[in-house]
Length: 119
Figure: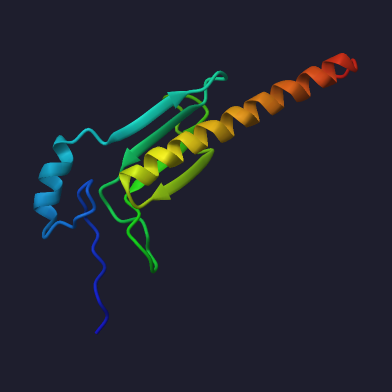
């Protein structure tokens, strides 16, 4: 008989005993951990999922950072998942830094093209 993996979690990483208890608590929580809007309008959001999104071996993945074209446009550009809130906050910061660097590189590329008279 295989061991059943826990699915429903609190933010502190402890598992719920039943889905009804989880649902009641989950409904009341503010699940957003962090959010940033970048200079080009891209929106980076980190949330507590409450569900284990690790479907293989390893620790539960209950937090997620996603990058979107803008707030309200949920076309996913990038995603990362984490096991703890501390990892999620560090991952959010890292994602902001990476995407800010991409924005800077794109602006510099456009300026170089313009200086060469390219469109």
